[in-house]
Length: 453
Image (cartoon, rainbow, N blue to C red; front, side, top):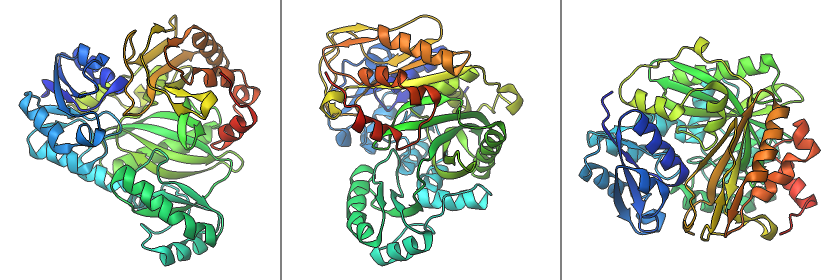
């Protein structure tokens, strides 16, 4: 291992996850903090803290120069970007490596190629991975968008070329709607990613969102099976499961094999995820994008495989070869993760930062909580609303659902509203229990089941 001190360039539960993994490997950590995050739990548990700027993310966690200077000045020899912020910024990864530090993630050129969603589609197609019919690369102007949409066929999805997480996405059902939505999607993509580039894809109705976890060392790659993330609100995932109960064995094999093929084609290094749409009616699946980072939902994969993905990322970045072969990865049981956000479901999921006045976390066999919360912690209003991830594991999906219901009953976050009430309702819903959902199901369900205080 060539890494001795990691600069954790993120916040919240993922920062805490990195601090803990590094400590288990005997590596010290320096936690980046904005002025609003001096008291967060990762800052308390890291070996040292470096303030990188004011509360506004654009002047702290997204300030490439400030982050890199702090990493160098604090004596770190590696940077872990977590997810979000600068994790998929190829320029930042390049700056880190040019400064002589190790970027714990893919090579800058891999991030650049796969981070541009239009380019990633082309690479996937060249590797023989099925893609959703769409535009050939980015669309430049409304006339090009109209021509591409006519060739693809309406309805079409307008998507940000430079990012993910549902930002910049619109669905156009006809040419007039396309003309009205292109400027909106451009503006949102520009604000979210600093790049207003767009591309088009055919809209697939009643699709299941399935993604494959890969791990590579730049020479070889394996998969750690798949997750389903179809329960989404405004294209933001709220509930994840592994494995995907909707997949028959032959579809699982084809999907995971295609993911490894694409990871090898780009010489992937570290942990990454390939996202697909799966049509349960036809059995067809389509690659949509690659996330060149660790993901929020990685714990469900860890629970069914027993493999610590963050630790493996650090080992690989430190120069170690991939320690696992495909035959070493054997899934066991079923895992579910639900996201507990500081949002008020009874008020249209309005963000609700505040002070945690009381906290009771569930425990027992097969229960894991990834969180940075503690009693007295003041949740700042400046960042993503994710407070915690509640993850459960059991022998079957039915047993995991029962365990999740029990764990949600034990969970109490006092002082601010959270989305725990949403998950308590979902875990009891017959369609969820039957696995009869798709990417648009939750929004329709919320319209029919308004949550009350």
